[in-house]
Length: 520
Image 1 (cartoon, rainbow, N blue to C red):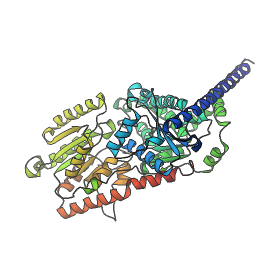
Image 2 (image 1 turned 90 degrees about the vertical axis):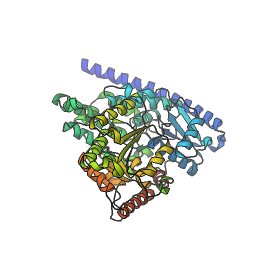
Image 3 (image 1 turned 30 degrees about the vertical axis):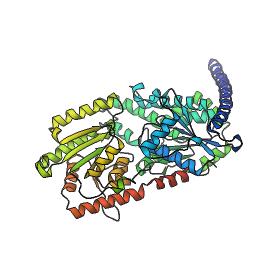
Image 4 (image 1 turned 180 degrees about the vertical axis):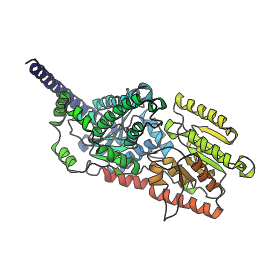
């Protein structure tokens, strides 16, 4: 009897929650209608035109990286193809104005945006998606933080189409709850939040930048982390199942996203569906869901579509291929996953194997060019300097931190070899830039560089892959010892492939095809 009363109380409480939540979302919808009218008026758009609003969730839209090139190229293409649409950018860059962001986009990417169909929704809670906010359980914390940030975003204005362009899949839950599933959603995935590879590394107790040595060395901690990752994977899979369309930036990313979409965990499934609170929430969010969206989503196999990111190769492709200096160039932000220590060790191995590369006309230099976003990144650079000192290669290397775009182009025009050591790099715009500039790439044999970028052209190599210090050193030596005709031919093949496969026009075509029909 007591259990029946408790269950009845739970159901009544849940029903009351549904009523309150429905009233709240209806209030948000009314507020959004007013906000949209104000935006239309501010932009000078005739109210009779009834424009559609496309929302882009991109909390770091002013960062100036490869992800931002994707965002702004997509918005510029949308403005050209859909003049009756307003692009909303949900961003946490509260320290800059609309005009400053537009000017930065043109200066950094040479992309012109029409301010008359572009509006920014500024968010104040971006700190909740930063690493520093979650020193423990970072992935879970950032995922929950993104949901709060999305709530702040849609509390200001609700779009007609919502696109996550930065990898915050858990925001789809919030959008579905607030809109009761009435608007389509889409995603451009640069890198999965969690992947089957990450689970495999924890299970195998393999040390990596996502699996610390103290965790890998402990059976208890490894099992605890495995349960944590299983929980995250299960709910990440649920989140990714919500969008109407998903774009992936490479075959590596697509394969992982597709695996995540088909992921099954019977234990997590049982825990999830036997939760009474979940059942109530499921009912609350689905009973008003648009029949059209539900039917179309259910009838289609869930898989991602590859849309390679746009790479501006125009200026780089004009660099001469001859008269290159004996420079090995790395271009990557000083982040842990880029694995700069591996570059230093590979270079040290190269010099140890070939002492003649340390002096005279045969001397070789390594230049590490990259951005340092904060104090942690600058500390990482100092640790790399210390490692170089330990490896006794300091006289032969140089760090170039936060270089300007013209300075980066200057190094690309001089270098002979482009070095990238990141394991499972999801795409690798830096590698495309190497190839377009005529720099022969030597990359880790994984991810986008292996499967999409450094691939044969007409059956002949466009670069090299490696797995460890010795194989990286061997590949670099091969390039440095090539005869001129062979070297020139490889540089030309690399450039030809990069310019033809990863041009901006290819991205625009794929972008439009991916979400065709969801907006008129």
